[in-house]
Image (cartoon, rainbow, N blue to C red):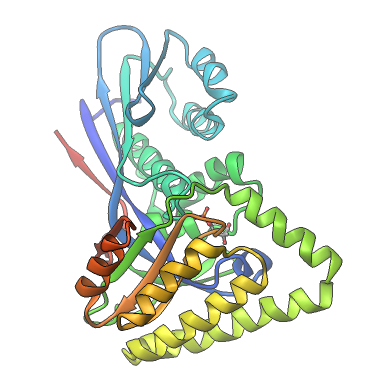
Length: 325
Ligand code: PMV
């Protein structure tokens, strides 16, 4: 196969789940948005007869003159990237070599903003473009899902879908539809300062459910019910009502055991300062909190005064994209 591009850079947004995390793993719907923080993967042609992989945020460099060797080197520490390389070495006709790959992300890992899915989507988009494979976005998202499975077991698929397509999406059982982005929707994302592991939160709920099957299934189903409501509320551009549903969702997530005292403090500060709604986003047990309101600048300032790092973000409606250099 002919290499058409000497250098490509692919970008993929992070994601923020507005409602429905965890319940989405059990087949209920969830709503998520692409956010204006990105991961990028750059692939350049080099004449070194090698494959180089530079993980800029980790300050780590791997290289080999053989793709299978490189995959073995990555397997333990970066199984997601090893899987990605394996998939593309099967898809590309020629031997993968003479390339330098650079990966970086402005998304903090373990913060619930989809850093690993965003990296996987950028990686798959860059390989697709560099080797002229013409895969569509659905296929890119599927490959990112395969990569995600290496770190998250059985993810629902909402992260890779949102990081690929961006926008605001209603997601259920690996299918999704785009909703209309409400006007004036600004997301205030606040970091708890606590790094979380998605698998810890998922396992915690799984155990709780094993011991209290009917009760936990009711809570999961209530979350699904409120997501259906939220879908209409979003289509009608009713941000205050959306905030109310987020607060209820936060209460149900706390009942499932994935909230904590820092998340509660952030929720209270946001709500006391005019937020319509405030809840954890992603797996919980730390990570980030998402709040909505009319005057998010003021809420952000109060949160900063209380020592909480925060960002006001827009919805990224392009999803992943590629540029040539
Ligand atoms: O990994 P996080 O923090 O972005 O959370 C992912 C959302 C979950 O619903 C908890 C898991 C999933 O696969 O949907």
